Amino acid sequence: MNLSWLDDFLALAATGNFSRAAEDRHMTQPAFGRRVRALEEWLGTELFDRSSQPVRLTATGEWFHRVAHDLLAQVARVPGDARAVAEASSNRLRFAATHALSFTFMPGWLRSLEAHTTGARIQLESDMLQRCEALIAQGKVQFVVCHVHAQAPGRLHAEAYPSVQIGSDMLIPVSAAGTNGRPLHLLESGASPVSLLTYSTESGLGRILHETRHSALEKIAKQTPFTAHLASVLKTMVLDGRGIAWLPQSLIADDLAASRLVPAASDAWFVDLEIRLYRDRASMGQAAEALWQVVRQTDYSIPGEVVAKASPR
Image 1 (cartoon, rainbow, N blue to C red):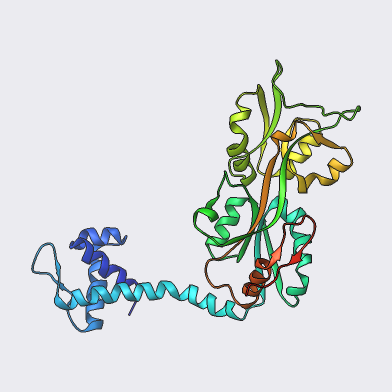
Image 2 (cartoon, rainbow, N blue to C red):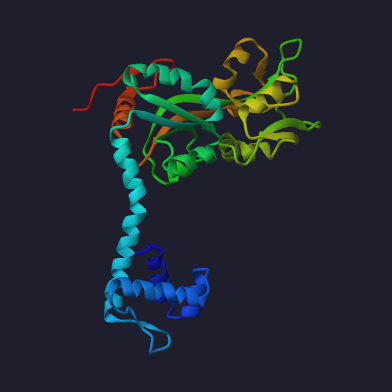
């Protein structure tokens, strides 16, 4: 039996009309009719009463209607089940992380877990937040690491993916420093518009910034000469003296320490961030599940330190 015959059968059962069902299945009516007849010959009985219009299911057809749905549902589950079997004993750890965290946070965080990942094959995909969310939804990664703010919950929060906070960060409005060490650009109301270098709508950090500071920024005269997906690109433009951008502290710590970048506004404009690890809702396999348990029992509340929590009794 050809599995596509099941879809043909269900299309005809839904419409009761050979012509419309053939159109829905993107084939000619004669070809469609031959496929339905082939299914009936394989079963050894008629599934449709063709003496009425629209055609109706026979008693056997009514029974097979349920069987067809069950068979297609089982077939649809096969790839996922096969991956689950393969993952059960897999030592692969597959992460997706936003670009900024891939460069700054992930190397040190993974290094802190080396005792628990010995022998594991680690794969890291670096991309924009929307793409990272899609990768875990498609089962292509087991974990996503991203910035999070309560005022800008993302897709993974909305779809109830389990998560745990594994770090903290902060968005800071910064400018290049002038020769006197003061910011070349200041975020303040005035006659001259402030030059803001902004994130695109696809950016996770851009979404957070919009939800947390948009209302306040509406009160400031500004121009937005440059937009980019990536914080690293905005950082380059800020260092070149082009304006102000909100950048993750984790990305610019060295530049702040060297006074290449300086805050361009008071700390009331800073945005506190969580760094969260999201996991797949399905079973992930032995290595990934073991890592998840370790992370859940680790205290990340002390900046720069990783402390093992007491296991719950």
